[in-house]
Amino acid sequence: MANGELWDAAIATLFAREFLEGSIIIGQYRTVLLRSPDWQDEEKKKKGLQAINRAALGAAVFAFVLCMCVGISLAVLSKGLDPRVGLVIEGVSKVVAAIWILQLSTMIPTLLGVYANKKHQEDLKVGLTIKSIRYNIAWNIWREVGEIGVFLIPFFLNKGSLLAIPVSALVGIVIGLLSGYGIYVANKKMENKSKLAYFMVLLLVFLSVGLFVGGCHEFELVWGKTRMVWEIEGEFWSHKKLPMTLIKPFGYSASRTVLQICCFWLWLALAGALHFYKYTQSQKIFQQREAEREKNITREETTSFASDDVEMGSDVSQGEA
Picture 1 (tube, one colour):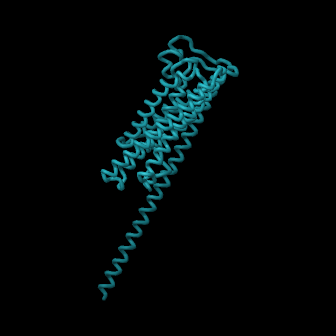
Picture 2: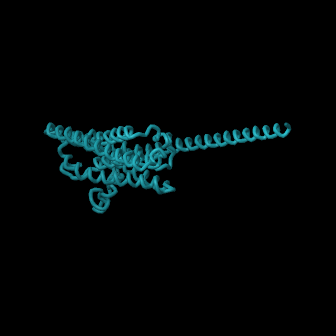
């Protein structure tokens, strides 16, 4: 990203991811609280929902103020930063964002219930009190906002990137909250969520690929570019202009160096391997739960038969008497 630009995909990705995760955490607690038999009293339920909202808002505001104080201090103290350092910072930020987005893509099928979760949702109900709700919500939201602050430190150090924070953050927040709300609604209303899960996974995987390739290309600009393999001519195909710039975050580029090609296919292969592993692990968990369910049914039937035998024996004894 050149100095003075108002948009940065890495910053938007960061805010989208953290706000998505935060909204998912809040949504999970709301869902459990609304469905739990222990929280069916309207007054108690109202207090629980208020505890969730207030804890989330308070933790987010406190973490935001702290992050801004640290960020402003760093921006004031950092003067005369080498532009090459700024490119390295930009590259590192994109690579880190690519890792986070790839990790998030592996979580989406589980969050939507398409893949099995090692922990049953019932585990969250154990010990769910107003005090535990406040602590868990506040801690998780503080952590999510705090991660944003830590990740933004390189951008505060590079003054040329400061202008990109407001717009990129706003776009990321909107995307994150809308995605989180969509998952919350889908979990409540949609019966078949497989297509939604696979679409989101595909979208996030290629967003991760685009960020990783872009980050590694920033390193090329600092330490020397590898050989240019091909380049598409014409303004229409330029990844810096509309319409093709719209798909640039997903890995598109009008030109490719050797490093970019290698990074594209290696990261895509890594994503495929991770998702294949998650799928096989999910199938194993489903099979284990099915085996446990059948075992429980067999045990109940055996117990029922034994009880019937005892009753029949008692009836025979009484008849003989």
